[in-house]
Image (cartoon, rainbow, N blue to C red; front, side, top):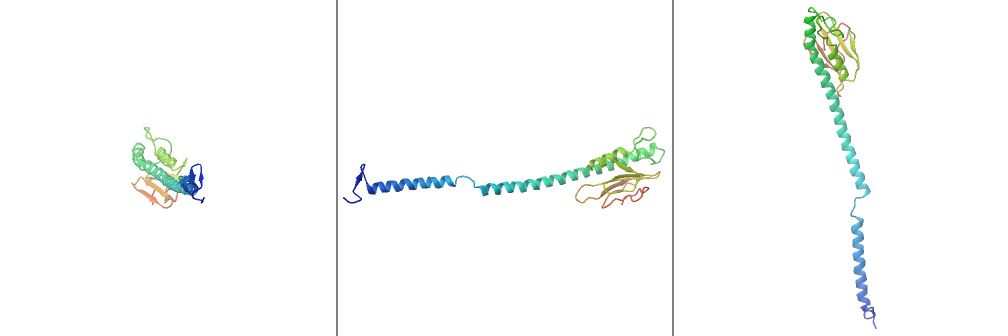
Length: 187
């Protein structure tokens, strides 16, 4: 008997060999499919790295937005202090004396102290300096009988100071503009 004609359980050796090869090729295909059906560790790490980079960019943008929001609040408080300063001027006998102080004018008209303090707090400062030289990280309010000026440092990346005065000026400067304790000009 030749090899191809020998029978084992009703099959020739050739038939069994073909059947065995077809079974193993099917098993190999199944094994290859299962090996590549998921994500590799490298792919997962790349995705995690991309998500980390995107979240860092978003958080940096939010930080800048917060700084700009603080600056806008401080500017609005100082701009609002101009009209309050005028009310104080007329209630105080046409004088700006003590407009930066915490005490109201005769008749109960409030000074601008509360608004300058609110501007300072918006920028993370707890107090204001009254009738003093401006300085970095310091909100300052100076007053005389004829005028007043208030400035606060800004947080935004450009930094600088925002200053308003009784003459109607509202300016942003790169450094403090109240250079003496009697200075009531901005810029």
